[in-house]
Image (cartoon, rainbow, N blue to C red; front, side, top):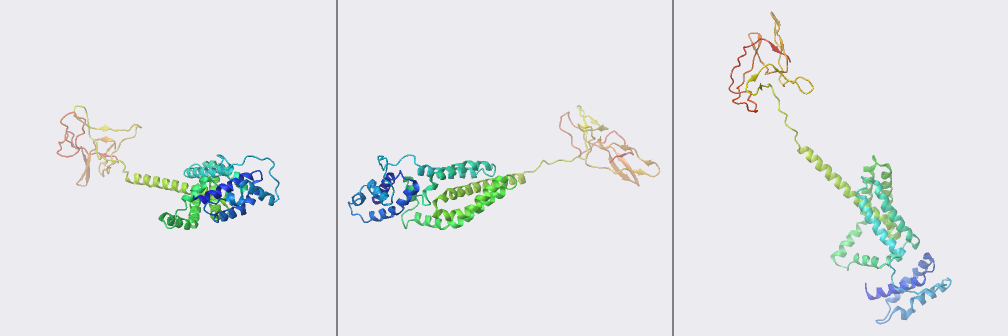
Length: 367
């Protein structure tokens, strides 16, 4: 900020301090025309000339203005100082806006899971706005705060620089952002519709009002207490939607890449004792007493002259092999290779087979 601007700010601050016994709306009314006049007058000053030399001390000039406006003289003369107080209503309101916007961003990232978190930033913003709601649409006191002036200076780079062109371009996109913001808020409301009706109604209302809040905030600065948090809420919701979508995509990808265990099927089972001797006529059951049947089934045999053959239980192992010859079914006990030792490794069920000592029978297994 240049020396001229500092001189104007110093002089106006002294005038406001001299008028601080009046209601805030009356002070704003007095200062409304004076600020432009003093700014214009400062541009006409000579190199070494000051506003005090032209108009007198700010306290004196403020006294003249209040008399001209018909206000009574100050009843209690307090020492007038231009030193900025640490905590003032405008400063608390400004920092409340900043804090409420930041908390809204964090709350928006969790609003889809727990919409009640939005109550905290709402309380902060309402209380901070209540401090300056009566200061008029311009909110000049907040605009004149040192931190606000520094922020405005940072957002207003020198003309012709890349930063200035970038900021100008971003400002031109504001109307589009207002629509995108409403769309993001509407999406958040839709995602809450089936789970939290109050959260759905609250975010839907914010989405509708946000369309009008953006343009109005340029004219009435009090709308900033709605427009800025609405933008933060939309960004927070966007982060959460991206996070949920990425999680779902990762989950689906992991499910698609997972292959279940390969279940091997058996057509026959051979049981050996600890000495490697093949056991026959073994009946197998599971833990519930249900017969354990291998996958392969058999077709029963029927001899017209002798009637149906005896039925072998389907869970009896080793299963006999069924053959058909000369119009008649017959069964043959399976043959396997005996194990060379009592190892726990199961012997193969096929290969070079040694006939068992059991002679062929003519009975049919059950299905």
